[in-house]
Image (tube, rainbow, N blue to C red; front, side):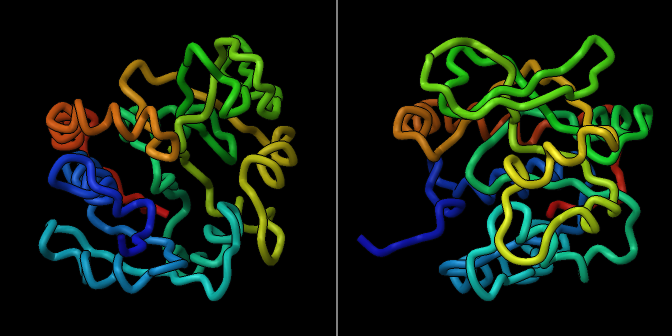
Length: 232
């Protein structure tokens, strides 16, 4: 079987990345920056300039693996004209109202806002601790304990200033950046909808069963309206 990027894994008759693009477009976000690396040509040949999805796609192809934070920093040249932008993981799908998350970010005035959710087993994700005001107070690594907890849904809003806090070279948002930004303001907003992480066999199998529902969620419009934000 030929190798493909994880984001191009099929969910029904569409790739996960196409579902993410549809989700952004349906909520009025039209300019996307796709961070690519291994097998980047497959993504670029599949999505081109984005006109087939009524969006504008630019690519930031990392020269070598840079991790989740390094990839965002490397894409900084595409983000010069924005004060904040959305960042999404390419291997998970979260039901989220982007406008509500952006409003939350603006109101709280921090550098980072994280879309969070409660799960029955937080052991494979690590836990996010949030106080009564929505401010993130800490993180814990994966424990393997199988306990419930609050985790990151892989969708964020960043002020552009965050790029200055990301070190050069390979780096992880979760391990190397977010813990160092707590004093600058990191906030979490719980999401009540579905979450699929295709990096686990169980969730990938579940995604095939509910693919029609995932498509409906991706294409659902929200009342919050369009925002001039980027998908990093």
